Image 1 (tube, rainbow, N blue to C red):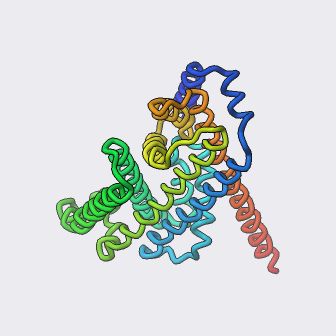
Image 2 (image 1 turned 180 degrees about the vertical axis):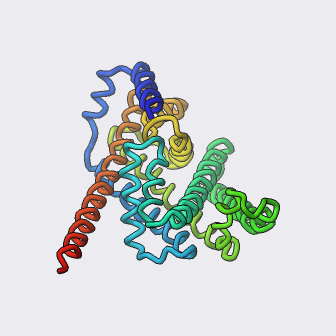
Image 3 (image 1 turned 120 degrees about the vertical axis):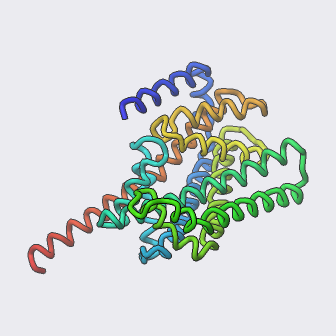
Length: 310
């Protein structure tokens, strides 16, 4: 943890050394708040969609909770991502909150792994189609066709891997820990369409994330085509997943400066967009923190009543 704190501080120091402070502050002060509020609203909506995606993967494995339960827990995960390493620290908390037993938490971890795989796959489809569209100057129809081909390729990949999961398990000893872990994913082999639906939900999430960043960029006067944001935002989101800094701080801002420079966006503007993106993450995370506190208070109140026999 100490190394990641050091890495976070180092990355931010390096990023801020590359920009003019006065200009950066001016960019942030010039923010039109209506655009930022719209971006925050979109960021909240896509977390709700992400919670629905997780529910679609967890219920077939036996977690028969309501959709609102999964959305609630998903927001809690965003909150814990703010203070735990990388953007996957909250996943541990989500698994812990989803079940009260060690076996159940292992199973919960499998649903989160599947959820992550669906999300990363959608990032690849969106970024890949956007990059090819820009590089080859494709029409909207051609870009959609490329996205459809990439999406079909992802679904085929899942069908080939998960569809042959039992054969892979037969290659491992019965008591092998990896076998015991992967065996939890067998329900996805029986119903391969689950991963396809999860990737489709993930595409909605990633498109929404790109729209959110585009809105906040518009708030400080940066207007680029959505195709650019569909290529830039997923690439940075992939980098944030790496367990290097806390919640991707430094990676997000540096990535923006690096990737947007080719479209003539000044470093100060790019870093400002990264900081605003992080600010929307904080806003969404605070909702998760509030939900966590409400749940803890409700649980504590229930236990107290039970102890008093009321």
